[in-house]
Image 1: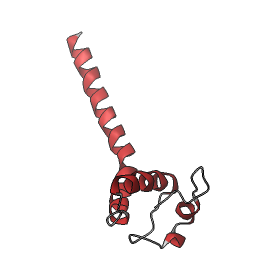
Image 2 (image 1 turned 45 degrees about the vertical axis):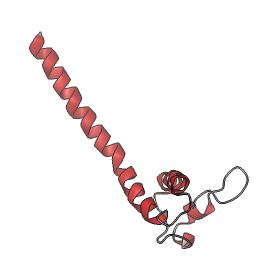
Image 3 (image 1 turned 180 degrees about the vertical axis):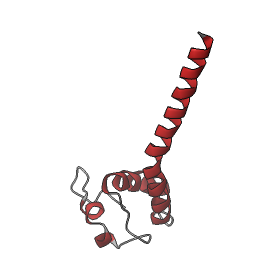
Length: 88
């Protein structure tokens, strides 16, 4: 009985660790791209938050620290509730 329980726990641990690696793959991409995008921001925490949201939805972040939004139309066209650009 103890062997079956230990085997179950081992299998569960292996499956859960592979699941976490898969789900974090997109965030590593977004984190690195947004770190560059927000590197000169006056409010880096806010910039990183919204850049991350936009990156997860659009799967891209424009190059550089400002401008270049034409490289990523989804990122460029996202609006907040006030109709202003959402993505930094």
